[in-house]
Amino acid sequence: MVKMTDLHRQYLDIAEPLHSSVRKILEGSAFVRGEEIASLEKELARLLNVKHCITCANGTDALTLALMAVGIGHGDEVIVPTFSFAATAEAVALVGAVPVFADVDPETFGINYRSVERLLSHRTKAIIPVHLFGLPCDMTALMEIARTADLKIIEDNAQSLGATCHICGDNRRHAGTVGHIGCTSFFPTKPLGAFGDGGALFTDDDNLAARIRALANHGQTVRYTHRMIGMNSRLDTLQAAVLSAKLPHLKDWNEARRNAALYYTRQLADIEGIRLPSEPDYATHIYHQYTIKVSPELRDPLREALDRQGISSMIYYPLPLHRQPAYSGLCLTDSDLSVAEQLSASVISLPIHSHISRDEQDSVIAAVKSFFSNINKTSTNE
Image (cartoon, rainbow, N blue to C red; front, side, top):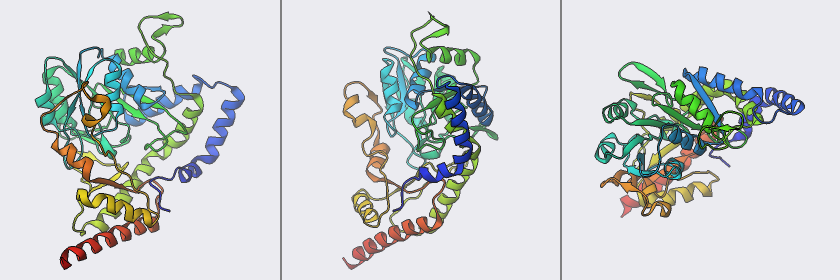
């Protein structure tokens, strides 16, 4: 069986230091707000070269806290990509604002800045670009739109922690540290994953950082004095220990996925009927997913062929957000969302993770080649 990801192999890399850390926490019994939390936040901030890291309970909470921190509320409009996981728009709706769905780029899958420009109104207060599948968006264009229109940028970096992008020429920044606030998820399958849920926010703004910390702690800056309506969202100490054990490996694990992606690309490049992932000059792709495009009529047959040979695959995302029942009558949309519609019908992700073996990749490659060889023979005979 070739899995989409293999968390057990990651665990083997960190087992010894993790067991020591967990034992220390169990003996000390500081399960909430233990010293490991502050240490993790410090190390994450250092890694990403950002002033503040605030951990929280999960990635959706991170987005919600970010929106609350910049003052987004009832009636405000927030532009988000329609080709994304639901949490991006869900957080907007949870704070009473209106998700406004933009189209995406057909090659990078990032939010299309031309679509964003069409959607701007006097109610627009923020944009949430999603660094999808490990590839950062074109942040230079988005930051210029935000500067001109006086908007906040909240980056959804759940899938691209450790990826980098160029801003305004040669200025290289980590994804999630370019806008006003960056958000990430520590869901187990993410580039840096916990053994459960977790999330974090990143910012260089001292005032925003202080506000986020208070909001995540029931609106308190002093115990039992609630300056604002907040929420209870915190990372537990045991999960901090897991993340701290994994953090020193993040760069190598990201590089391993990049190498695996390069091998896929070299081996699949000549197959007629496949569009492979792209990596623009402005960004470094960490390939959280290796997502290809095929003809819509071939996607399900390809997935079935892979499954018959014990090879996992995934479809992210089969229904764009503007077509989800939850947002019917709630959202606004661009007049043209054709790229997102096409992607939802044509993308399929092949197995890739930090510990995938060359033999496993060769099995995937052989299965894909066999499928398209048979399809092309059939087409020729007809």
